[in-house]
Structures are given as C-alpha cells and as structure tokens.
Image (cartoon, rainbow, N blue to C red; front, side, top):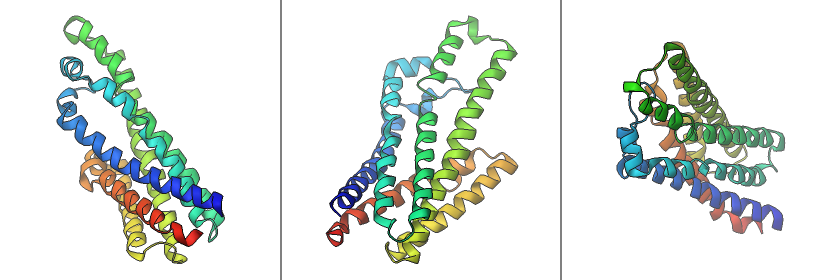
Length: 233
C-alpha cells in the first residue's frame, strides 16, 4: 500500500507539473522569445529572431517536459489498476507513446529545423535545390505531422478516454472529469479524421484547442489524485 501511495502521489505531482509547465512554455515562447515571429515561411526559422532571443536554448530545455507524463501515467495506473488492471496497463502504454511522440515533435525546431534554417541563411539568398526542399518538407511532415500530430494526439486522447472510462465505470474519478475526458477524446478523434481526410492543418491546434484543454484535464486529474491520497492509507 505504501508503494502504491507513493506512486499515486508522485504521479499526481508530475501531472500537475507537466500541465502547468506546458502552458507556461507556450506563453513564454510566444510572448518573451517571440516564437511566432521566429517561424518563417517554408518551414524555416527567422535566424535573426532566434539568435536575438535565445529561443533555441529555451525550446531545447522545454522539449523534455513531456517525460513528466510517464511517471504521471504510472501513478494513474497505480490508482486505477485494482479496478481494471489490463485496461489501465494498455492506457499507460499509450501515455508512454504519447510522451515520446511529444518529445520528438518538440525537439524538431531546436534541432532539425535549426540546422536547415542555418543552411538557408548561409546560402546565397536562401536559394536551394528542389530536392533539398522536398527533403525538408518530407522530414517535417514525418516528425511534426505524422508523429507530432497524428500519433501524439491519438495516443494521448486514447489514454484520456481509457482513464475516463475506467474511472467512470468504477466510480474512482469524479463523473464530470470522466465525461470531460470522454468528450475531449472523441472530439480529438473527429478532428484527426478531418485532418487526415481534408488536410486542414489548423483543426488540431486551433479548431478545438486540443492541447490546452488536454492540459487542463491532466491538471484536474493530478489534483484529484493528490486529494484522494488519504483513502489509500
């Protein structure tokens, strides 16, 4: 029981840190490090803005934050495994996949896109061959779109759905939080289908604001887990 309590406590703390840190990174990157101004056309970075603000170092450090989701998911598993151990183990695996996909996506800009943009800046007026442009587009599509959007959103939303379903079915989580998670996951899947079929790149980021809403759900989940620690004694 002590081990379960420690796991739940650590998981709840990590979920809260993760949700708050993701929102803080987005705000700091946009308003202090001028991230929107740094994102130039054709998947490149505005090197003058990047060098001036130190954006690359900030994004590099921030890219490891999704790993907080791993102990958080383990804590959720420890809290709910008594009700549906197999389902919660599957949910934990999907949370792990989502965390790694999130890290890979977050590392794209301070690594691959940094050197690609540096090459464009050093070339004559940014002139490069079409083959290089296709290579850049292909790498960005694989890492950012397929891993960073399709895989990450699907895995994260499936984890949210499984946790919400088990918590609702066995009355281990507040009903409003479970319904919130189920609706959020279903809406995310609908948006993914729209993204795949119609190629709308904004439906995930701006259409339903999936990421900040998911962070809010994760924050509430972490707070509830910490609030229920006494019942585990």
